[in-house]
Amino acid sequence: MELTEKKLIQDIVGGDKAAFKKLYDIHFNQGMRTAIAITRDREVAKDALQETFIRVYRNLSSYDENQPFEPWFYRILINECNRLLKKEAKMKQLVQVQKTEVIHSDYGKKEEYDDLYEAIQSLKDMYRHPLILKYLKGFTERDIAICLEINMNTIKTRLLKGREKLRKLLSEKRGGQDV
Amino acid sequence: MSKKLNEDQMKQTMLENTEYDSQDKEEIWNKIEFEIKQSDRKNKKQTLKKRYAVLITVAAAVFLLFGTEAGTGYALIDKVKQLFVPEKKVPLPIEGTEEETDVTLKESADYVIYVDEEHYRYEEKAGYDLIVPKVDLPERYPEVSMEIRQITDKKPDEVLKDVQAELKKSFPELKNPEKVTTPIQGWMLKGIAGVEWNSPVTKTFIVSNGQAGSFVIKQTYFLEASEGHAVRFDNMLKEFKLIPKE
Image 1: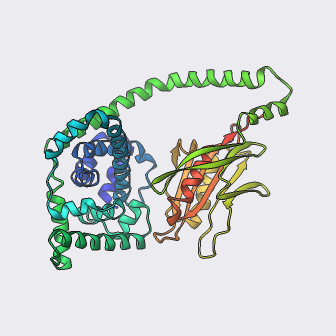
Image 2: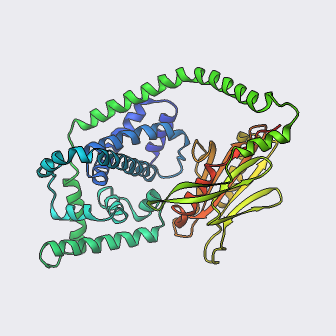
Image 3: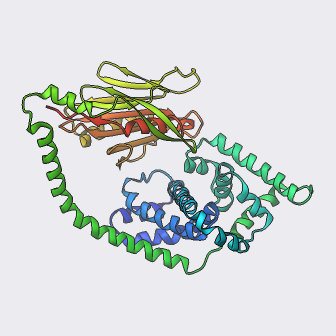
């Protein structure tokens, strides 16, 4: 961990609220983008990021500053995204019957993505999450392994298979052209 | 498309599709700040209330359990044990799906725990109890076990330092102790020795024994088993209950 970040965390643990704001400013942009990519929903992403920072604030005293901060932070973020997505799915199930017509009329509002992003988002989470952490967040395979608490060889395999699946999906979409 | 171009495009498409409103940053920060202030205020108010509530609850429990039948300790302990059904089913989220597991009551002199006997066996050893996979794992797998050991003369805070020092020998990157409320209330120490599939992992809990001592519950498994054995161990630990002393 960089010295400045270590100092920042020590200051927050010591009760310095301004230091917490600095930490927020540093990690907001990439945290927000990652949450949007993971949840596929900007409103859920906002809630997940908010909850993540609150959890970080409350748990910093138990965080081991000799460990890298970002994999720890993103582990909390991904857990929060998954938790809120599950909650959201349950809510949707509950109102599905009454809202059938509304959902139908909302169909046209679906966000439009380019082919590649759509293909990434159609992958299973086991491939999608490592790809997002690598290409959007810029994590190394080791960081991804620490963040997802999965061994590094599995991460390498999932990245490789994820890319293969993407090539296949894009090739099918583009009528068999090589990608 | 070359590999390099592909990777650049991956990054580019993710950046383009994860744009957000410029106001979001301030909006979220305001909510975080509000939430933290609220909970700080609430915590202060509740601390006093909680102290009284705990005292009243403990007093009531002691009266109900012991107050009416002084002098019949063993009978009372049996009575407490009878509160636990011998077998039950508990939901268990394993690797993304939820399954129902049968668990069986195991009683020691000082605690009860429900053991998932479909997958594990419970062994009483000299000075400690051990839960290990029912079928011994092939040699290429690292150790998988959950050890329950009682230290009768040291409180959790004292035991914590000893356990921490001991674990550091095998887990140099041991994380700082964390106070947890689930699967059990107490201190938790977690260490992972590496990032390979078979890297050893420990999750050790230090909890009060309800008197002047502690229980040290040490889970040992490997990284690939984080979603399997670790979840099953935690699930059993949720059902760990102390037997009140006469």
